[in-house]
Length: 421
Image (cartoon, rainbow, N blue to C red):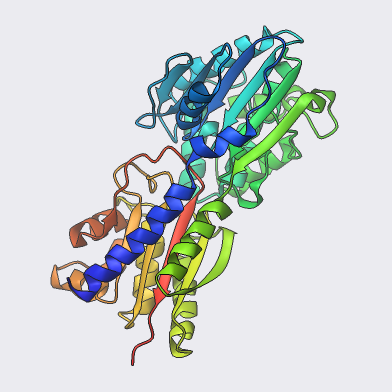
């Protein structure tokens, strides 16, 4: 086994430890509510929804009914709950039908019934319920424009919440249940319940004016249909203090910090001193990669055998027509800034198994990455400029492929530094 092969295996071992700690079904079980007097009705949306629903079915010995929607490919076999697999990140007709059914089912619940809401990253796209006169296609166009602009998820969700009949606390507002328990897997900075899956059972502090300002700042045209919704006071979301939230018990069962803690423990077991750079990092992926290269070089010069660990959700401003995602852009930005520095390697992957698009979760960077790429006729700087990091790392054989993981606690990035003699 070559030295690079050994480093690849060590990096993958660290990532696998992080993913194992992010098991959504296992994390749900300690947070399950007591049996209600009436019915337990389940409503779920997100990349971890099916995994949580499967764990619930195994653990719950009473009557159970409801509907969960997850991204296509993230499904599990369910016996008592209905499952819909739908498109992501742009919402589709299957998800729209699931959201409509959820709203109707929740509105028909009684005062002795309990609504159990299972939320995770991806839930915003998987529960589309556009306010009239918006159509689903119009909402898809707005979402696509915001994604291409490089807008962070917090901004995208502010807009989504004000265009929706289910997000921004509106599921809680419309539910007839006597009580609501929400169990969520966080994929947002600060674990803010109002942002996880766009906060369907949480008060929304953002405003219509903020939504309009985000569209202006990101260059998204305010069409007549958008203006009709965003200029209508009735489109304002329910705010903190609204009585509907008094019956909501919100429980975050899993966070990005859980995955990063496991990555730190695995790094320490391999002889690296773990240093956490933050669980909630945001920013342009290639720029963050370059900034982390500076930190890695500093650690190498100090002679420290360390692992720099970070999470969060980075963004990509799409200017080219290539294939890739934030983790691979981070990885190539890091590699270019390191320029083959000895003793430094890294892995960057999205915990859901999908870095921007299906196929790969992220990539590995090694000291020889740029040299091997150029020997194959690849131009690393041109690949980054064209947002074509997917093809770049695929040609090198250094893409990370996990398949759908059934969870989503954002990115896991680890840089290992082995000082050279």
